[in-house]
Length: 531
Image (cartoon, rainbow, N blue to C red; front, side):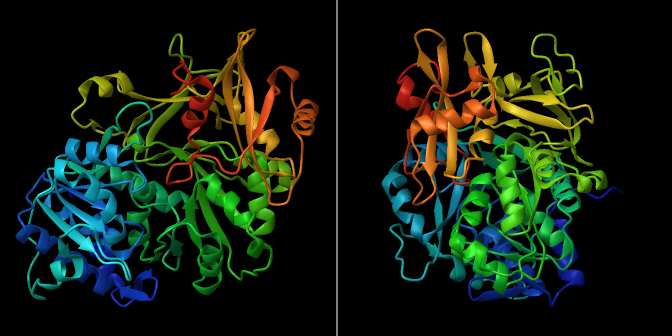
């Protein structure tokens, strides 16, 4: 009989072979795999005793702590579905998700209780489980998480549920922009295959100490919640992104691996402590969420000796569908050339299926010449089962078995795919296509620039033109003219931004991804370029 493909099985394996190994570090708390497994089992039993049945949904609104990790392993064994919530969303979006997802229970961090209190009267939630936070009293009433799992007898058994690998394991919501968030249905199989890719291509091993910098709610930590356990590695929890703390953890816990958006990399390399610490271990960092500038990768390698591993994907694909495979021949290139290659999204991973770039007009694959622009499409083992309760949007996204990503890219002669822009972020000025990420890549090389976003703004003559919105390094001084002169020296004149604004900070998602639609709202108002 064939075994069901589910990442839950890796907890069983870890408890069997590594019972005394430290599984989870969360501040001053540490749990071995035996202890972690016991806590997870008690959570499953407590949920069952509370009335959670197969195919019912449990929402979880927690930071990267041990309780969040336990929920990923404790909810699905019942055949139930975990709904991880982005705690940085507006109360409007949270209310929509909690109603749309059909969640019966909410496991919530005490710190986030105030958000839920504002919308509690309109929610269908039947039971609240509160994860306590030292010095923080929850604004909503519920059962204490530790009491909830602590009331389960030590010898109680987890109910036996026959799982189908094609049934939903997690319901992950995309961030809404001008429309409501969409619920992405991921199965046991899609999560398993993605985590296998994480395990293999990010080179996760038994002695890895993995720092959960990336929010676990974001596509299940990109699969890291499963992959680290599969290898018997150690999960180190991080409540929020704090660069000095992260650098301390690098030293004190011997962190060997982590994941994060390019914005997080930028925060780390620009922290003063980055130039002071001396790390004994090599650290691998998977990055995605936005195309990282080659200059940023070069900084990460030179300042912190981070081995940057570029991956690419979407919530709808579990998320990985491409990774930048490193070849020995690249080692002979100079650091700038190496960083340029690492900025590419790369090639298909071993277990995800087929990914290619197709011409938007005829659907044929583009030439492998690094020039012909097309849309990235994919099919195979990690594509979502669909959008929850939304067959129309599912049909728009998945056509003839292919998922259309909305990302514009070229394919290089070696098969490496490189994103040029999101379809909605591409700037069309006077009939010319201008990549916002290409301009950003040039500007990131300027020594005064800490962060940059390039967007289209309306123009009477050209329809729309590029505009650079820049955050400077602390203490740096530079004028708009100097920035524009710099870009003219480094790229074609028609691509040069027509104006520059200097700001204190750029709007970002919880995972550090730039929210360009918010910037566009400032210049387009109710115009067409807000999405």
